[in-house]
Image (cartoon, rainbow, N blue to C red):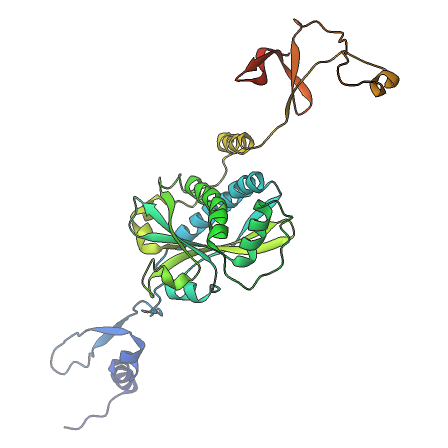
Length: 340
């Protein structure tokens, strides 16, 4: 027997039909049918469950480094910049500023293609971690540093040539200072022994990771006088995975009232500084006429006795009392007491 459906029954039938694009949109539909007696006009009531939205994922360049870890690494290398600026200023005897330009994740192949050729490229061991890291310094910075180390002003123009073996050994002293500060900056995370194992002028000759491996790249700007140049520090993320749990966002945030680390860093920098030390006999004076008439063999009478102590001056200021003596055929002084 034919039966005409009411408007409510038509609407219920239309709602029970799944949309054509439901499979493409990623939505799923769980239907819970309700049955009634024969002749009952109840229909199936669909229940739509929304799934999580799809996310773009690049299998050639996976974005797997947590942002919190990148923030901690940025704070860590900011502190490294402050420490290495002081160390290089003492080593080069000129004002040196090091600043962090960026810290990002990239592939090792993209890092290599961004470097100049030739350059100063160094492979670093990172014991006890597995793998190796890389440290690069552009030749626009290397040549002025070498000129500064050899007594020049450090304002050397750009040179379009490779560095020699002698120049490479000179710049290794600067790299050693930088690597030691890098080791100190990473100490709160782990005692990593950064050490230069090899050095080349062509980056392709030192392969520290596979081409598509994800690395953490820190780019620094160095200013020595009027000269500016860049440094790059690269470390594979796979080597840092065992330490991922040790990184905290407040890793290098300075705590109020805790300045012990700063005092120690300043003290270590001051210990490398040079200071003039002189021992003088004070209290004697002569006229200009007598001074001009002095000749070989003349005896100049002093107002102080031989037994009176001398004053040992540090940077022109008296600091100790001392006695003159001769040791190993050289004139010397022996400190007797500290001045108040």
